[in-house]
Amino acid sequence: QSALTQPPSASGSPGQSVTISCTGTSSDVGGYNYVSWYQQHPGKAPKLMIYEVTKRPSGVPDRFSGSKSGNTASLTVSGLQAEDEADYYCCSFGGNNNYVFGTGTQVTVL
Amino acid sequence: EVQLVESGGGLVQPGGSLRLSCAASGFIFSAYWMTWVRQAPGKGLEWVANIKHDGLEEYYVDSVKGRFTISRDNAKNSVYLQMSSLRAEDTAVYFCVRHLNTIFDYWGQGALVTVSS
Image (cartoon, rainbow over all chains, first blue to last red; front, side):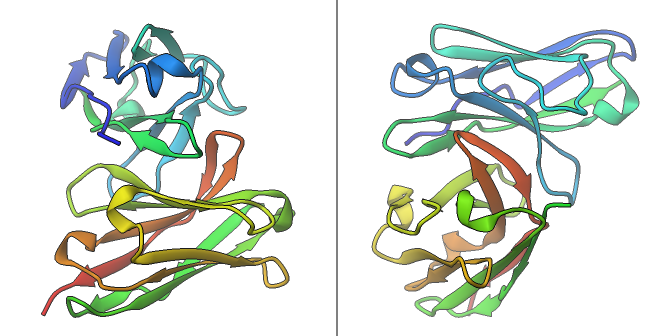
């Protein structure tokens, strides 16, 4: 149950795109299409942004998209806006009703 | 509107016990799995435990097995986390989370647990 690996930070100017990677193993990310992404602003509860690798809950802008290749999932934020500045965490099902989160990525809008 | 409200956090000495509660409203509580996720100060999220909608299955992260117990009372729309043999590394904000299939779709605001002498 080791944490999934994310880059500590990512940044982009308004209007640009940023992509965050989330690397696990064949026992979690690579083994299931059950990767979700969460946005967390300082002092707030996390918010679901992407589920089942590519799906967006209602109300989440289509600027947010997800993908997966092998043991690595990715979250892309296109057309960066100031309110996208936050921490982002991936999460994967790890079998036997266990879950593992990523180490987190702080996104800065320059 | 889905609401999850945690309570019971506070300061506890190492080796002590604490029980967190989470009151749910705005949805059919007995139809959903529930989960606890924690976040140590300045650190990332960690899945702690989850419980099936009928309370008959529970799962835990290895680091809390044998020390923490998740339970629920569907008549009271509540889920609990009984924590014992607490350690400094258990210090965290504990979030109550609604769990739909493999998705954590609604989160409470969290309860701070501090383990310190």
